[in-house]
Amino acid sequence: MTNARPPIARRHVIGLLAGPLLLGRGAAVHAASPLPGSSAVAAVPFPQGATILVAGPDGGRLGRWADAVASALNETLPPGTKVRTTCTGGVDGVTGANQFEARVPPDGATVLLAPGAAALDWLVGDPRAHFDAEHWVPVMAGVTPAIVMARPDAAPLGAGRSVRVAASGPVGPQLPALLGLDLLGANVVPVFDLVGHEAATVAFAAGKADAVLAWGQNVPQQVAALQEAGARPLFGLGALGANGASARDPEFSDVPTLVELHVALHGTELAGARYDAWRATSAATKLEFGLVLPRLTSAAMVALWRRAASQAATQPGVQSLAGTFAVQPMDGVAAAAAMTSVAADVAALLELRGWLATRFNWRPV
Image 1: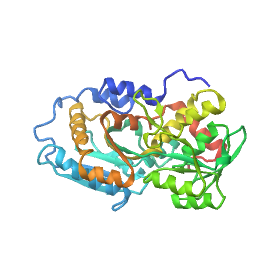
Image 2 (image 1 turned 90 degrees about the vertical axis):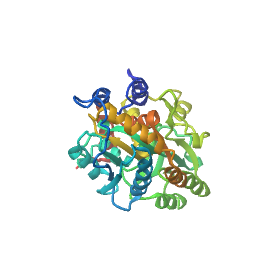
Image 3 (image 1 turned 180 degrees about the vertical axis):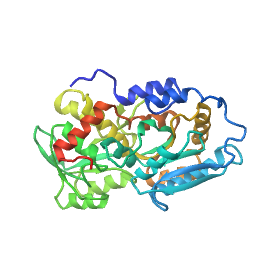
Image 4 (image 1 turned 135 degrees about the vertical axis):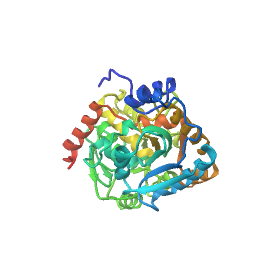
């Protein structure tokens, strides 16, 4: 396959480094210049306080991040700013993201804290998703490693080689494992309804699955448990290198990326719409959280939030939670790059949804 344009992440990161570090083609244009009458942030930028709209239930996994980030921002936003959190919707974040898109004005007073699951639902065309993740203006992010673990006899992957993959469903967080193995030429046989890391590990240990994706919180511990059950790393979902291209995850520097494994097996690089779709779904699966502003937010307000987030990412509360769950907090260019990778163009979106329909008879309902 050939690809006439550079990969999504690299294409956007080049623009991010040269401009306002914003997500999405439209958002970069709008945020590069302040809105009329808002060339500078007011002396008291948050007279009513600042709000973090948490796209998840109260007391949920995302709520822990909301508490830590809010506490840190209380210290780094302009003096006197009171940061409050409001939780809404289910764990996949779609309801909260919908409310953010429909109701939050671009005045910079409210940011959205959303999980990668919401972006994944947008990518696959979930009809509940009435938002466009490409419009989000990134302020801060948290990312995790993700490693496909497999039985030693599952590799090398020959043409038509059947590999049973543990997954919650066709459009769950394991989608990059399903799609990645397909790109490698394997005959992917999903083992669905395995929700959660423990269920997948048990299925693997019982010989009911050949491959499992370690993702989300505590990936090193997940990898260790799977290794005890006989699994070995097959490929990683990777990390963004300095040039915006996919690189090995620093936490698992001995594990090849999907591209490296494809070259080893087939002698060619990966490119094209399906690979672009894989990159976007991988970025969504690795995204523990994203802290974002609405599109059209003034450049001055974006800069204010980013300065505060850069300092907040180093605060003890955020660092402690990150260490506990093996999550890497990111700000500035790194956060923008991580979240820009979730964006996909029309060709990649159509390819992804067509592949899901053809391979698993899955269609948005």
